[in-house]
Length: 363
Image: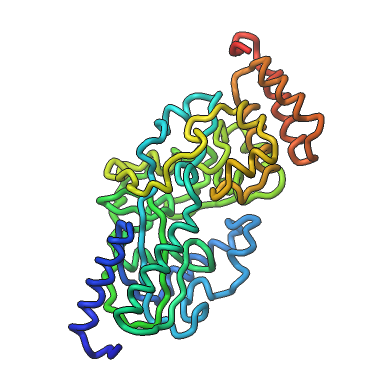
């Protein structure tokens, strides 16, 4: 496509956004790919050790911050978003407030978003190729070294909030992002302006103090990191603060005033499965590995594996009110647990047994 043919480029961008909406994306924009300030911020984040054990964050050098190094020939980035907040899910605050229930981040209650978003992006590229002929591209859905939030901001899809998540003033922050790196010279949209203002509600909302300063997250303290990314033992200092959160955490987003504008998803694939929006901790702790694999098929949860699943639930049971049923379940599971899980079970048992009788719940 001739980059000097401005009317054609403008018309193609409009068509692209229309096709994207037809595929279920709730926002589409085109970004410039120069990210010097974001690269400096990212490298400083790495130097401070805030990535913890996520070695993949530094493994690819500057390919994450320089799209042309990752996909040679890249000229434009097409960014998309798709809402995920499940309309039918149990109230998040109520689930968090009930220590007998498991809290799973609302993005993970349905089908694995990686698969959904990638398939839609591929369909969008097929439609685009039908209009312009073969072109070079690669699609991403949190699946490669891509600085997705910075690119989404540049595409006008939202600003990066103080909690480091992307926020749109008309849609909140409960959405997934996806990208297409392509060699088409498309007209870029303007970057979104920031609207956090003086609000800092997300900082004190974090149970573990992971948002150490506005726009700066220490992943080593983040419950999403501790329950999903961390392979080994969860540091004892954070276990009580985890509460009943067994997969991820939404607290900083729940506290964000902009999410009063968040829209429930229209995507059936993101509806809760197997009652995981309000499941009892003891029920989930009783799952065999076969049950875990069956009930998490096609889900993002499966990536943590059965051992981390049990580890996380053991911590939550330690935080639950004292109950004979909880103590019995922990003791039973300890008999054949892995070293990792047993460590957390023993901690949970000590927590349960240390609670005064007047804190006890009916067993």
